[in-house]
Image (cartoon, rainbow, N blue to C red; front, side, top):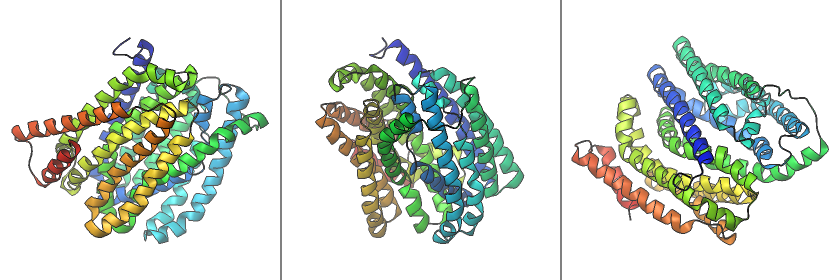
Length: 456
């Protein structure tokens, strides 16, 4: 045991952290290089393309990987081949839908480029539909190291592909072509994860029934999750310029780094571990309590320091065209903290076979955005709307807490202490920067008021 975490889980978490750190470092290099080569408006257009692509995938998602992890028959060839067949059929349908939506979407967002980009981008769905289910099988078997090595290799391929395309084209097609090469590489590599996996087209009736029975809540949750995660980009695309949307996207991507690490650790280690344990909620809570505290305390310290350093990070990595991200990033970091809390709880509940709870908590977050963002933007402007984005994560956490409390499986007192700790770390780090002469500037005015609010 290490700080309440078993040796096996500690090793798996270390592999997740190492893999995620390596992948994010490569993505950061990719992002910084692309910002030097391409105009901010390019990132605004691609933020829309990615939002629409992910949206189509999520609103038709029945949780192939989640089913394989949680179902006792997940490693049965009839089961995972049926899952692969349904995945392929769905993605071929998405190609047709994406092409059909290209012209209406371009008209709605007043961007003629989208009408040309979306039909080409629909090829992504062919590649992802043909991907092997081996990633889900590796997570079910908790073979995290093997999965991590391949993911780092894919990040290297993606970096080379996108930078090469940007050097060749210097426009939005550079990103599109680079991402297509990355998607094709992912498809190929998934068949190398577990040598010997050769999928066949089959629909096993029992497997299909089990996939759809569990998947109906994953479908609802994924659909709500998409709109909750992308409502900001879709709404801002109608309210601000594409260049401004690109700057917002830079801040949003940086803010999501830490939350994605915890989500990856929860989804790759915590979820399959809970699913395999087969314990009752109260027993599971006692087993997880200490390890969860340690993991989230480290996350709280990391996000708190990152919040205080955000203006320095933007100034160091990006040129003056992106300086507006220094005001946006610290606000989003507050929401990131609550996102970390909920992602940890989401994975535990999914492992317990309760996918409905995360679905309803995402619905609460989405409702906050739909109601709050337009009102905030109309009455107080863009920064107020960004603050609503952060508060949506808090609403999601509260809704999830209410459901888990009914199951006698909540961590409310722990989370309150951890949140206070997060605020104190951020405040102390901020004052250290001021003493060191690294504070100041317009972003620090927003940062000071933000930190004081968090620490209350």
